Amino acid sequence: MYALPAVGLSLIWGVMKIVNIAHGVLALLGSYVALTLFRSFGLDPLLSAVLMLPVFFVIGLLVQRTLVRPIVSQPEISSLMILFAFTIVLENVITRVWTGDFRAMTPSYSGVSFGFAGANLSIVRTITFAMAVVAVFGLDAFLMRTYTGKAIRATAQNQAAAMLAGIDTDRTGLIAFGIGAALAGVAGVALGLIYSFHPSVHILWVVKSFLVTVLGGVGNIRGAFAAGLLLGIAESFLGTYVSFRWVDFCIYGLLLLVLLVRPHGLLRGSGA
Amino acid sequence: MRKRLGRPWLWLALLVVLIVFPFLEPPIFYMRLVSTILLFIVLAQSWNIIGGYTGYISFGHVTFFGIGAYVAALLFRAAGWPPYAAAVPAGLAAALFALIVGFPTLRLRGPYFAIATLALSLVVEVALANLPFTGSGEGIVVRGGMPFTRMALEQAFYVCYLALAALTVGAVVWMERSKFGYGLRAIRDDQDAALSVGVSGIRLKLVAFALSSFFAGMAGSIYAHRAAYVSAPDVFTLDISIKSLVYAVVGGSSTVAGPVIGSVLMELLDIGLTTSVLGQIRIDHIVFGVLLGIVVLAAPRGIMGLTSR
Image (cartoon, rainbow over all chains, first blue to last red; front, top):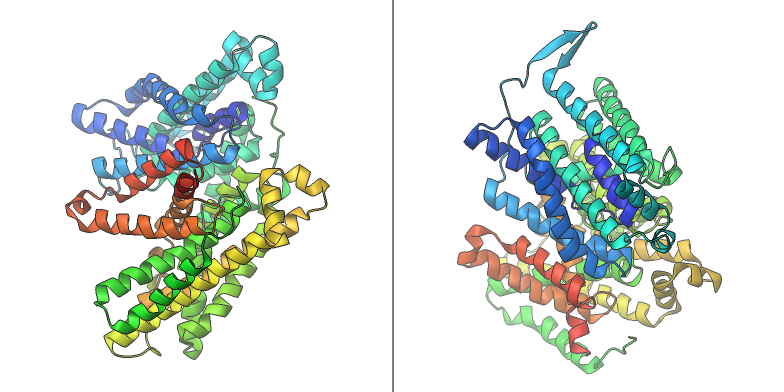
């Protein structure tokens, strides 16, 4: 379930060498916008997920142009800090607008499940899984087949060489950031359908996305997808063996362990 | 870039005023205000050791503050230790923990460390909130062993915070001039170059992280007695991590005076924002975020950078 948010993070990180700590809070904004659209206009969250794509793409472009680009030549710490500042501001704006209460999106099909091959599958989880599959393979096809996609991969592998080959790396970075933000928005809708959310939950989301990204190899989209599945399964299994209170503890412990043993990921990052 | 400590007599005069202040028996409100500012001077300055001088941004400074608070609470429950006695073991426990987690994470580049510290604060919070000997969700009451009258109590805590703040600032002053401090800045500016001239990278970084956490842990131990009650959700607020970082960076990281000035101005601003009419809409964190953004974009050396121009 964490594949979707992690893919966007992985893309931005791979191409721009920036760890977008605002990724979780952007996703959370997606959750809240979808919630409002659903509550006030009865718009199905799945439709608003489609709407999120262009809207968050533009938000991503704006964030990149106003905040990230001016300091792109400075050490990576600066971009981390500016995005942290953005995160603080956005989280508190969300708290002002939607209050700090726990929220949940409950369209008619939530909580309904169906039997398939002997297993009981929840509709919401199946749909969000399908969304993740579509997003990951769509992005993969985009990166592999289109010119812009190839430019993004080239920039991720070697920025100077990409520049020499005539690729506008500045524009490529911008587009990658936009796509990453668009995926964050969609991921937010998906996460909002599955879990209840509140304004500070984005920290958990970003830490787990980070874990998935590192596990899958930075910039490796398919790796992020596999690692996302792995983490989801690991969480379910842990849940059956230890108290629910310790599940997150084990997950974060896992993150520290992965950082210690395989900081380049279980599967090596392959550029993008 | 390298600046001597402006005017030493000014600092001394300030210290004397701060020492005399509580014994003039001023209104409790002002004493608590200065105490709180002193607490944040300790936190921002200790963050500065790892975040400013070493260049490893920590998003989880609260971890060490919280560990210190819990050690003090446990020592109080087990043996009735007062805050000034508990501060040293609390600081040492935080420093030891920093060594253990710093060993894997400080080998990585900055962003990994930043996220790891953030994750760490979540891990430690979950652990302390669920372990039986830390009182689980109930927390620990830390009350007693301190003077009884209101004024004497406030004075005692004030003195504790002042001593700790002076110690922390003193340590950074020493660091500025020592070989250790030069080594750290060399690592921050160019790790490869520093290593090639014989600076022992990981060792210096570990010492810096432990030192930073030591002071944060001591601050936590005094805070535990001050709050008279320790529980994971109360102690492990992201607020502490955010303020430590923002106060240090806005004031001017990798300077001695920056975090001090940052803590004074920002904490006053925070109190202004939360106690005035503006308090109802609670925009303090929005203002913090915006200020941090402006500083990173326009004035990377913070308020200190503006004055030395």
